[in-house]
Length: 107
Length: 123
Image (cartoon, rainbow over all chains, first blue to last red; front, side):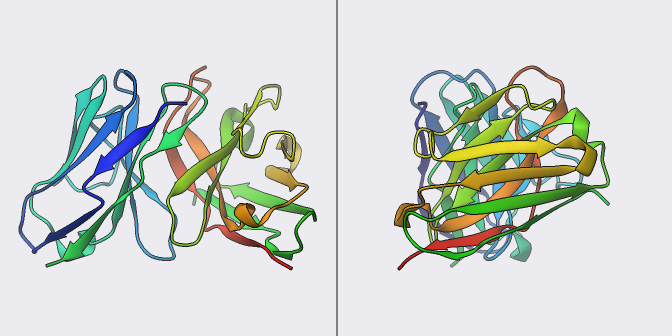
């Protein structure tokens, strides 16, 4: 299985900060990577697919980049609604795997 | 409104069985590939199983292979997960989730998720 490693596991930031989360794959996954946001007690929400494509309805302050084994999710100006846990997920093969998550906390 | 609603969770003893259901509405269910994804309390997300739109192709995570069975009834717009020989480590919220694309013939991101149903395996 392809292992997905996210960093950091926790991130403390303030409203207005630029935030970057990294996801590394154990082998090349081309651009077959998605990012999700999850709030406590809720289902995950798709933010980014194919590494850099913004899902419909997702604010433009969210962006994704990367290919191969290194990917990033950037929030250009953190908003109060963005405090949540973020997961990357590879879909290069049918053995789908997620990163361990990054919790974005209020500083 | 596009919606997935899971049901069937509950408390079950180790070694027991449970059948989860997922009711789809607001989209042409028979055109989409579907999955089950779980999340243990306080932990991350784990993909469990995939089924193609027709039901002819199925995949499982190694952790559930031989114990869980995914199926669907396109006439009833429903997805199922039969869970047998349950273990404490199967305790989790189980989500049904839709692949974003129709008939892409490759894996995809999950664009629609249900609200989840909790399964607790304990004596």
